[in-house]
Image (cartoon, rainbow, N blue to C red):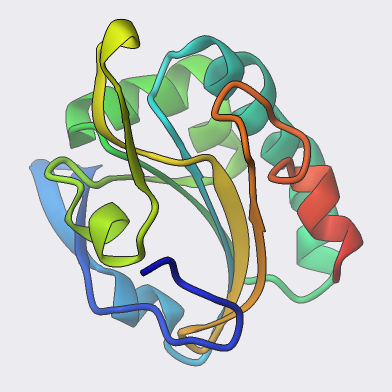
Length: 162
């Protein structure tokens, strides 16, 4: 079942690159008592994700901060090595966006956002979405109907709802 507005996100452990290599990140710890924008993409370095989705959150980062958002997190069904390199390549890391990998799609599946597109080599990937999460509860949720589009899930679209 797909996560809905008003529901709590499930506990999940995602991965990021730390100074000494991959490290676990308890998502619940990042969300507790905070207002966080979370957006997810089908895959790092894929065309729309790379040229539209991540840049939309880089452009709107200051606007989110002005609205009281404590952190912006990008999630993808990729390993932390790919996410770290992608964050550097897009400028997301330099902009302060947290890049987290969900390598086994555990979180993605738990919130009902998994999809597969075998002809493109995308198996158990994430649908494209953006959400605002307040103290672990989803308060806004924008999901794209088409994984190749970045309109309702763009940073600008989520920011407009705040």
